[in-house]
Image 1 (cartoon, helix red, strand yellow):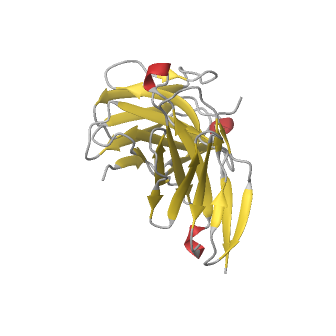
Image 2 (image 1 turned 90 degrees about the vertical axis):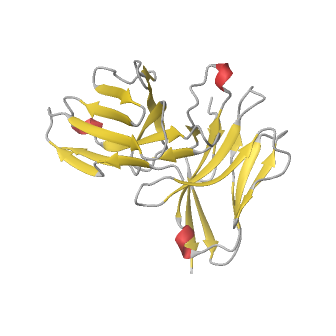
Length: 116
Length: 118
C-alpha cells in the first residue's frame, strides 16, 4: 500500500533556530501534500497544502514566512519551521492521497517538535 | 460552524463488547467522503474505514463498520468485539467535493478517546 515516510520523528531545538521536516511518498507520486498540526489532546488542523511545482496554499492564521513549505518533486515535500519559538512546539504530520486509489489518504508517522 | 462533530470526548468499553463512536457532519455538497482514523499514543494515523456519500451500503472492514445515515448526516463507527489494543483516539473526518473549492484535504473532528477495560 501507499507509504509516506516522515523524518525526523522527534526533534528538540533551541528558540530562534530552524527545523526542517521531510515527507516522502515512497511508492507513489504525491502531487499534493497536506500538512497538519496537532496540539496535545486536540484535533488535526490543516496548516497548508503543498502542490508540486507551485506555491503552497496556507490556511488562515498560518504564517507562510514562518512555516516554509517546499514541494520540489513528486515524492518530496518539506516543512521548515523558521525561528522556532516554544509556542511552535507541537506534533506535525503530513498526508498525501494516492492517486491510484481515490479515497486513500496516507499519513506520515508525524514529527514531535519541542522548542526550548 | 463545525463540519465534523464528535460529541464523546471519552468512552469506556468492556473487552469483547461492541462500542459505537458518534460522528455527525455538515456539508452542502452532494459528493463527499467520510473517514475514520485511529491514533494510538505513538501519534500515527491509522486508516480504519471509508464511506462515500453515494455508497448505498454501509462500509465494513473486519471488526469496524460505519453506520451511515445520510439524512441525519451521521457516520457512526461501530467496533465489535473490542480488544485492549483498540484503546486509542478515534477521529472522524470528511473530504468535501473538489469542485466546491476544497483542496481535497480531510477535515477532522475533535476525536473520541476510547479506553477498553479488561
